[in-house]
Length: 423
Image (cartoon, rainbow, N blue to C red; front, top):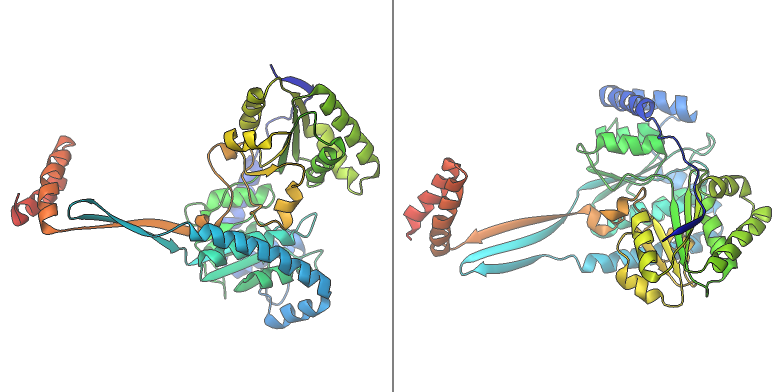
């Protein structure tokens, strides 16, 4: 049976009614008043009141010149990896047509959404990698119009590297606009900004609630909470590397969650000791120490089968496996956002540069969904056609099927074809 060496603190269930009420107020006012409401909330929440929210080509060019060659080359490298993997994903999602019965033809078509909105968060850190993930992916999917929004940095506009990432990723329109008002503008439109069909990207609790309330009017990727990491180890794991990976996620947010699942109690204790050592000199220890102290868990398991059970129940956003035989877990694990196998890979690779997408399910949503990928921007639609002979034969069976449900008008629509085309 699983044994806890460290357990996360119990936290009272968050009452989100006030969040929901504020979000509803902002959405309603933007829907009614357009840019005037957007400007009101931008001034109120972000102290940002520019002449226009859309970033001009001249502003982009000025920012590009301000960055070093190395910064731009590194961003370009990361974007190339993400674009390449997205292109490979797109290649395997295809149209097809099949004749299921003589004269009955069924098909599938893949159609990109027309316009999408990418929300790039900007709170504690400039999240330029989020621009890679949420702008490049829809462009590879074939979305004609990608609108990118991100909040101002300390009232000074978009962080330069983030702006370059948005432009280099292929954004067609860029707005310096944050929070709920940004999502409302994307969904409802405002002067100069036409509404989009889908909104993607992470954010704080207000952004998540706005996406929840807007779902239906627009499509969304998923509802993300605080970031998560679970690291599965055995006695072969390097405690120095494991501790660094756990703290790498703990620095995100005081509410971030971490779990260490170990097949060896001694290995787990070494990692716990190493975490305390690294925290002493970690530049972001003020956040990471709170996150690990309040939300970190250490679980000892007796067998690979029990490890699978614990990991799948946790259903983490990021799951690292640092064991002698990681291929066993690749074959058998089922609930995770993204999987990092062996000590040679780390969550930071997936977050920034390796090529997979970092917009991933949290709060156990990995039980029923994966993360953002080109398929989220593609509509899989179907079509059908039949010969007259096939329609006449199928219609007789379909008429009876309709009548079994007492849907008699449905049955008549089949019967008229049987009568016209013959049995």
